[in-house]
Picture 1 (cartoon, rainbow, N blue to C red):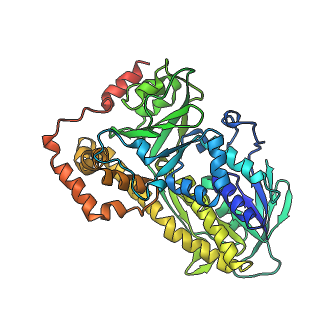
Picture 2 (tube, helix red, strand yellow; picture 1 turned 90 degrees about the horizontal axis):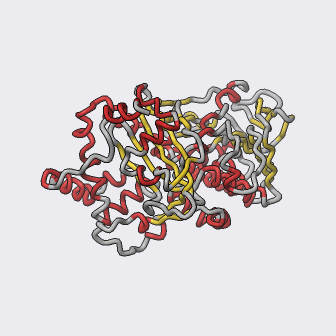
Picture 3 (cartoon, rainbow, N blue to C red; picture 1 turned 45 degrees about the vertical axis):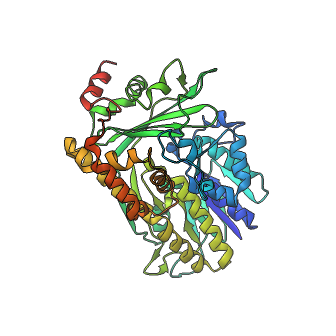
Length: 469
């Protein structure tokens, strides 16, 4: 088949890799003019206006790492060669863990620490290494071409672009959260049902590079938590880079002042997890403090009442189902959908209806539950912020039970790692009676333990510190 893939982000590139491996001819369209840089550091300066999230840290979770290991091993090796770090569960294990001895299945408990730009750079190099993928960058899709004559549902047979018409047997929308899919399909008479929930938060990120001769303050790929009014995380990257992310509620206008680089660094230096990393003697910034706003959880459906509403057109990644990027699930879920798309094409050939139904079914089963989990998590975070001092009670089973127990109980720690890395269903941990009995017992004994000092300042102290900058 000749297949047009719109969007050369993670979902689009992995779709192209899977489909090209099966012998299809791929035309990959990218609206940003982004010639391939020479190396990962040059890729960090890519002008990716269509994907502003590349300026923020990403979690390349175990679900994605295992997919690459099992199905695209050449990509996994290329990532390692480019400086990406493969970090296993055992690397996270603190000295306080009761039994960190390896167990069968631990080989799946590993993720990649890497900048998004480096990840895309590797994927693009791998895609372009095959003669079945043609990349046209700086090309915008302006419309869809449909088969002559009225049909229900309409059949897409190509795309109109700023560089001319391209005919194809199948069009794959991988345009991400800013995809124009709804508008394009509306122009050919297709109304796409959509459900959307505001995430209710804004996050800010800044990247740094370790100075020559300095080493990482700790070996964890991620370290973070919440102060109630502020969420935070430190993410290791490739080639001695790392980033700090701060998340606040959209309603918190006072803390929006964190967007300035000096105030961002001042705030990071007040957090126990970030302070040793952002010490000017240890590291130096390599980017401004970037803001990511307008965060939503959204699901679109191209199958309604068991029937496709369009033929010859499918969507993968954030253009179909997107979740709050703060949870780091987007790239992994996009890769899962890309593999499902290739499997559907392999199984059904030119049966466009069967392809549409198969892609939809896989997304409903494997991706939609994570969308629903993200909506629930965002609502819980909003309620915690609004509750103020009551938030401690509302979330204490997590804050004073589950999370500290992951540093003590290896069984709980593994289960938690599996949950956040998409290796189990969203409710698997909470539905495990034995695990939750352990968490509940530990939580009940919280009053007998020494109080845990706060990981950062109060909100009033934070605002006072920022005002002084």
